Length: 213
Image (tube, rainbow, N blue to C red; front, top):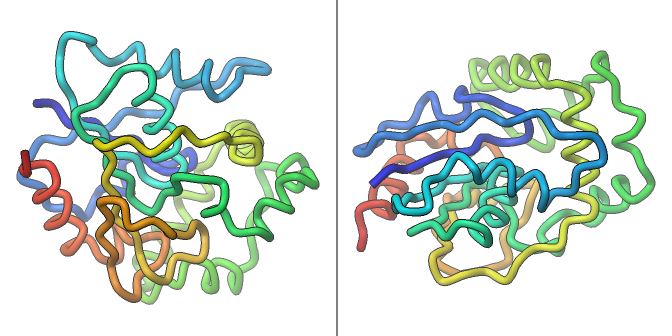
């Protein structure tokens, strides 16, 4: 069975680069949003990549996990695994939600980079190579896609969690919270970049989740 993955907010396969998996992972790149396209309409276009007659698993990281849940409403996956993602608006921190409602995301530009202390605080990355990876990912983000994605997060109405949903989440994640114990595996003292900074543990959890019938 094929297992597909969707990275975080406009990122690429670097977010999966340190995982050691017992199964083949096909990473699906983000597609360019259409003008004034809703999140559901985007998910409809994105889901055209999946063959309805071919069962598949789907892994989504952060914003990619939100998209994975939308896709699961259109074309049912065997398993949907969320990594550092949310299943409801209440798991998006209040200050972040307020900022989105106020339209902070609309003033972002390609030259906008968060200060170093904010990166350190919210991501809590201890190793220099991981901090450099994060900076590189942020430098490569498409500012137009970023604005679109943040606007969709601000208005996201999450679907009801399904039985085929599984979660992996760091207990120290300051970007998105995890209040649910619905098929959830917590990684102690890890932040939002858990798939990179705790790649060994996340690899074992993913392997077990995919292999378990």
